[in-house]
Image 1 (cartoon, rainbow over the protein chains, first blue to last red):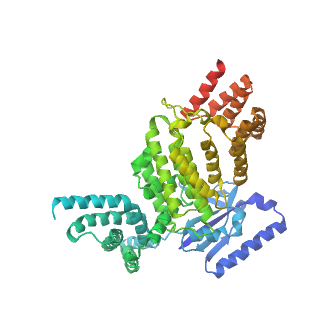
Image 2: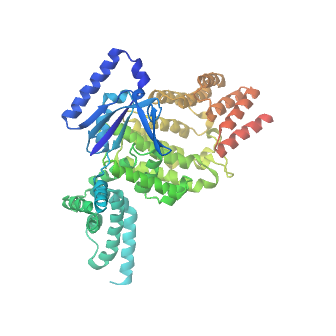
Image 3: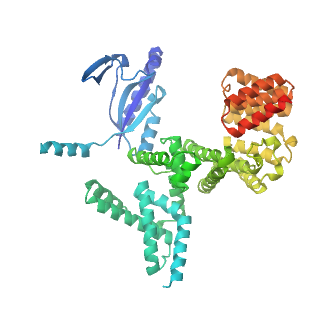
Length: 129
Length: 417
């Protein structure tokens, strides 16, 4: 089963860390990512640039409005996503508890939704018209 | 078969339901992998027993018969649904090919199933409210109405909480398993928290609702007894000991008018000696094991009170030592406050007051009514009445529970005289 792990990070804290502290943290994280990859648990993932480079689109008064910044201004911002393959939630919790990134900020684990039935249904609907 | 045998059989099945249904349910959840399917299967199995046993006789192992019948009924039901929903066909096949021998249901595997059920219902990925509701519903077999009544919630809210928790178990795939040895201490902690929360819900309320509330404490004690049987870890023994020792004072801690009577004023002849003896035996057992945890230490403190025939004869020195150990196990300001009160009893109010003032000065207990009430008590004993009055008044502002308010109001009234 696939779990999407959303890794949050307190950007201010990250910026005030020394370079060697940051490097040590990244080395630890990348080493663990390698372990996950080798065992077939790391399905995919991306790190995100800082929230200050985010752009948010919203539907407002019948058109798209564009604003600078993230969707929600919170102390901890989404810093990266990891797609994890795990047997069940206990397994996912076990794998992510050992991820050094958890020390930098919380992980939110969400099971991936299987939309294949909905997609098939939608295709049937669309083919009728 | 005459009516008499029919009636006897009906009674036997009803008795079997009372004693075995939760065990059978736990096993069916494992075999079917779903709470709702297991619930349906359980009822179908008992219905089948009422229909078939009068005709075919009672099977040699009724429990195994009920489990395997429930399982087949569930697979049949899924197969019927598969005609409309293709995804169900796969599920039915997987369950049907799961080679399972009902005679292999030894006592050990059934005990494991009950533990699995407890750990799943108390999983930390569920909200604390959902853990309590699900445990009372699925492990203790209370109805949704009973749980809602005891927690002063609307049944529909509670039912929704349970439905959502079950949906999360299914959708996020919370497994039906006893945690591994490495995770056990943390996960067991969550289970013990649920049990103690249920107990305290039943213990701390008095007055009009006391009847149903007592049932809640009884349910928590039953649950802890089951856990002691399944997983006799030191803290499980410690928690059961603690609850029995507290429960032993129930009758003595409320006046006929529903007022709270504090420990020092209680009529100790009303304490339940049987519960005290059982609690102390469990405590000894817990203390002979390692590590000694927070529940065991709290039980040990309760036992010191239980051993003292009069409030004046309490061994406060021993209580202070136990609070020292408790502070090391779980550093917290509330424990520190309780220790300060014990110190006041051992060394005099002046020393205790110094400590309480130091804790209050730190600010973390400034909104905690019992900290101000304790300060007021010590000021009163030192004859500093004006200070006592202002601390009681502060405590009164912060107290929400009626019985506790009345205790403070009584103290205030005594100051006026």
